[in-house]
Image (cartoon, rainbow, N blue to C red; front, top):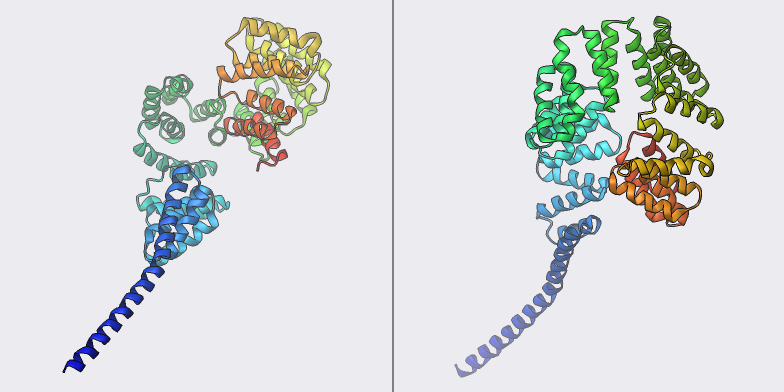
Length: 478
């Protein structure tokens, strides 16, 4: 009996030692795993907080390796990948997630964004609509969907999406203004209400939208062709080229022999890179004695980079309306395009003579000397200084003076003037292009690139945005 107890004690001690050793092995094996898991978690949180989405996505993938059952890690990884622009990886993760559970509205919206980034607009629109049906509140996805519909001229669909957005952001005056502009095509009463709301939220928008609101008030008393032509002209002044195209097309549909609508339509078509000469020639044939028709036919030729043909039309317009300074400026522009700066100067000076009390034409003359590097030392610099003295709070005046100094290699003074211009008007794309050019000349290419990118954002569809995009491409900025 005693011998048996001794043997049992030995076995108990042996089992205890085995258990202790086994437990130690388990602990030693788990500690590295726990440390790695905690490290990945910290990296994910820190990278996300720092806005380093690429590293955050990597950290979330590491967490997935340790906790493959935790769906939240994959969702967090997808969100980081979308912010980082890593759309291929995000799509793969979305496909994996879809195999586990149905995608929610936000996740479907991400898929739409991925398709849009690949220039697959049909799939993008279809997917975004699916997300919308699921109740997405992804404002960017809905905004992109509305923009896609607008680019295609699918105005009713654009109104539907923008209406949804306005319910999400009822205090967004810009959004309401955009919605109201589109509603003006088919629903003038609804447009009047929406534009009134936008104007009440933003006083500056109230001034911009006042011509459109006035036209809506008069719509009932106008013929459809005249109403749409008027609307198209307002859209054109607001920079809404796609809407202007639709409005002028409707005016022509109601009245195919409407010369002014045809001339405007031709110009807009040329702006959109579409065939335009047929409508332009028809307009000129219908109204050979109309200066406005010849003016817009000239703009059409100019848009097509045919300055000599444009000049013929502008000179016809001038012969019919010799007191119009805007026509003189356009005639000058055709000479500038062909390098005939002596003739351009004559026509620019004629524009100033015809409108001595309008500072806009004086500014154009000052800008002409600087932009074309023509007689800057003899005439341009002194005119620019005088203009700044008269209009010290004009950002464009300081920009014009800066460019005159730049052409004379007075870079420090030019930079001071450009700083002043951008302080007065932080959205003046021309000044950002000029500053980018100046900084590039100094050799600081990364800083110059920043200014060019700002100009692209400020003037995406305008001439300075185009100049800036070429500069960005030249500097390898994408």
